[in-house]
Image 1 (tube, rainbow, N blue to C red):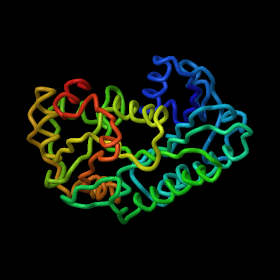
Image 2 (image 1 turned 30 degrees about the horizontal axis):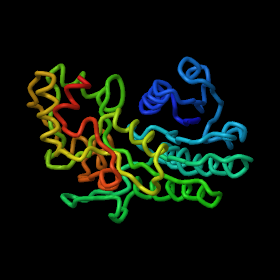
Image 3 (image 1 turned 90 degrees about the vertical axis):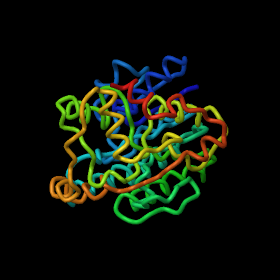
Image 4 (image 1 turned 180 degrees about the vertical axis):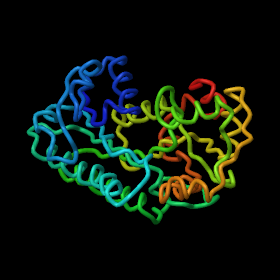
Length: 297
């Protein structure tokens, strides 16, 4: 199959592009800095989601478009950053779909990233793809983001939206920050530690995106492990994998003081499960936390 990937130089994007190439697929990449992508992708196209549509010829004759691009969420929020987070996803997706609408030979499928922030802070409630969306900034962004992706269906394109959880992998994502802290015995629970963390291995995220392209599925899929963990259990498991103690908890008030509005979201409890993927026959390579952490540490 022929794929074009936005955000292909990011943590998840690199995994997907590498996996596509290893499986013999064609993989092109959109990037604001095409030179960064040229080392791995077959073809590169310059595109900044904040600045116009991608080249129409870049989607012409593609089988699948994977859309990952978006401003980093893991930074202290202020009005300017929040607008970049929103615009890069919502406006960027609108521009991508507009380009798809103009292609003479449109892709068969658009697979658009979204986030488990769509569900909001829900305590111990078990959340599936059928659950209602939540409240708050991230939920509002995800709602608008997914709505823009759905427009591709107007042009006969199959649409899949993948709500990604807390991604584990080597040399990227949250582990890039957590491992050094835990290695120096500075790791600990966040807040009460009772909040649910819907984690997922980066290889399973990549596999789910490619699986969604290769199978006639549509709608929402949660990219999370079948076995979410509470923060206190995740912390204990990571400490065990690194053979380090976890004795320095971070109080909730300190996290909020340090990270501001983002800190409140860090403490959200989101007990998400991948019901749709499991029912459709997708099998996770890393369903259990201990095995996933051993693989990425």
